Structures are given as structure tokens and as C-alpha cells.
Image 1: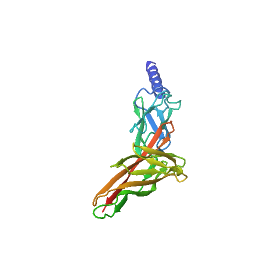
Image 2: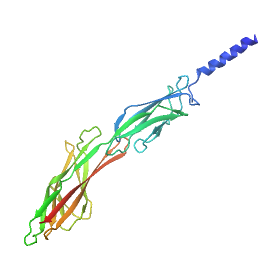
Image 3: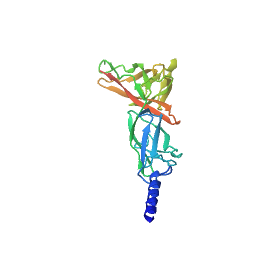
Image 4: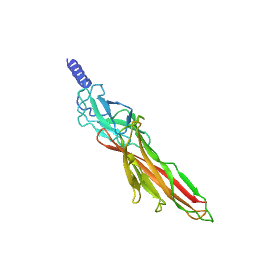
Length: 276
């Protein structure tokens, strides 16, 4: 009879141990499976990360708070699900991407809770692109008479600067405000002159720098700024006047979480005037 009672007690203990429960796992013998709603996303956009937690016996574990860990914090910050896993062991959080410039960034993400680490997933965060076409370099030469040139001022450039804005998928963005600036003129000499003609108006660009104008992209995603550049002519044969116009284009978009994402691009135009 004692032997039968002992067998019954051992059998009950085995059954209780096998059943497990829906609460915290208390050890790292369970499993945590991580998935994401997208593996490629634009900068400033959000994706959903989902983690399912189960015990060693395969039963869902609830009321635990996984942390989602990112390999690139400045692009996708770590997030902890303070709501905790549900009755079916599920945790879901939005992951909002931050600023990415120039090239895509690959981010590795995993979840961890109660000593259990999930599988890793890879998410590529793609930037929008802002490109700037500055006026081409210009050269003007004046022929001397008796080793002297008449000098004066010459119009070296009569064209324009243009900026093109595309989203992370390569689609052009219309109606986007873009600020174009002359941030400085290297080797500036009094008489060197840049003039903007936005929407038929006239803006003369002189020190102090920077000088800016804000434009709106058209249906092709382009903001065009008519520009002229005038430069001083040297008067001594064999001499030259070289100056460089430093351009900057900037624009900003708002991410899903109200986080501003700014894009900038710089270019230069070199002007060479000489007396031959």
C-alpha cells in the first residue's frame, strides 16, 4: 500500500511540473520569436515589431516586458514594451526610425526578456535624397593691350541652380520647401556679385553670408533658382581673379513620431577671370 501511495505522489508531482503556467518563465529555458512588419523602411517611418514568448513546454507566457534592442541607436532607439506580453504571449511595439543621410543603414534588432533572447532580424532604413545642381564652373579671359587689360566686371554665369528631392523609394516629391543658400564666396573681392531671381524678383547676394531663398518643388520634384554671377576682371597681363561660390540646399520632412528629418547638400561653382 505504501508503494502504491508513493507512486501516486510521484505521478501527481510529474503532472504538476509538466503543466507549466501562464505567468513569468522565471528562467531562460523558454523561447522568444521576433518578427517585423517590414525589413525595408524609409527614414522617419515606423514599423511594428512582434515578439511571442513561450515556456519550455511551449505554453504562452504573459505579463513579461520584452525590450527590443537595436544595433544602431541613433537610427532605431531601443524600446521596452511596458504593456507586457498578452495572454497568448504576444508583445507588439512600434519602432520609429530616425535620421539617415546619404546611404541606407542596416540595423540588427532582437528582443530580450527574463534572460531569453530572440532571433535577430535585419531592417534597412533608407534615406530620402536631396540633390543640388549648382551653376557650372566659368572662365573668362580678356586680351591685354600693352600688358594691360581694361578690367571692369564681366557676367560669368547666367543660368541657375536647381534642387531635386526624392523620397526613400525614389519617387519625386512635389510641394516640398527647399532653401538654397550662398553660404560664402571664397576669395571674394568687392565687385563680385551674385543675383538670385526667384519668381521674377531680384535678390542681390552680398556679404554678410549666408544669403538664402526658399523655393517649392514642382511636379517633377525640382526647385529651380535663376542665377547670375558677375566677377571682377584683373587689369595686369598674366594675372587672374579666381573665386568660388559655396552653395547649400536644405530641406526637412517630419517623421511618423513628429521627429524632424533634415537633408542638406553642398556644391561649389568656381569662376576664373584672367588678363592675357
